[in-house]
Length: 340
Image 1 (cartoon, rainbow, N blue to C red):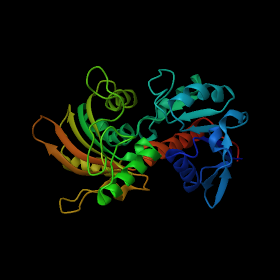
Image 2: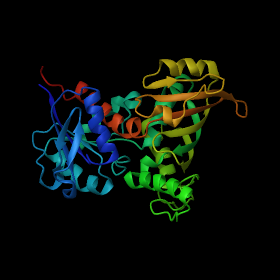
Image 3: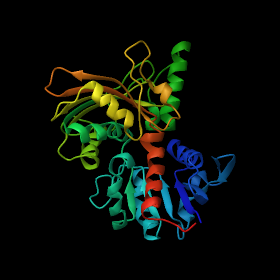
Image 4: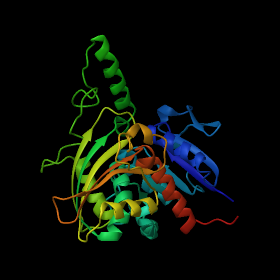
């Protein structure tokens, strides 16, 4: 006997990836529903070799459904997640709305799957921010080995993290540069083609952006509240794949060689670290992959126990859809077991 899984936001970038990954990983689902807003009613969403007719969220009855993978934004999550959860369906939400709720576990399965035990308080589980997810996968095994004191991270985030319109803007601006057409930005505050923008999400009173705050707060909730984190988040002209330059200060000594071996054994991590031309991973190579790739591992001599590394992942997968499906897998294995 399998599970009944609903994907809300099935016509968006992440929703489509959720459907792809459910099929790729052969999630034990007897039934899968593609759900979106009323304007998408009747559209088709690919699922494996077949298609699913998109159903309207307003009319869908979640009674009898086991899991809802939700990627519809904070507004719909605020309105609909409690209603869906009240019908007995566990919501795994990709928006930021519930991440810092004390009664909602914020989960990266390779890092803190044990926190799932609190899911029943609201029947809602939060999926972290894309940039946080890949970073904590790489930090967790190193934290276990030498205890992290401080992290300084600079991100290089692809436009897909901002949705369809952002991807279209990069494509159209790039094309227009070669035809000398107008490049007026719409989705981004400045030109994104052949440029970088040190601004993701809204600015806060202290000068950091909300994206940067998320990396701090979510890392503390997921991994360890005592770790000090500072972040600079930058949008770059890449379609898919987030990269991060991560500098870590530990309480105990940890050599680059030891860190490399620890990461090679760690769940969800793939080390590609040759000190030669091309001996590292770039975003284009991680697209469609499940792993978080780690390269450029080296000691930082400017602090007592320092390490620097380069972390790359498919933001639509590990940063969103894959992590949500992995949460569902862990949830089923631990708490929603069904008889064969």
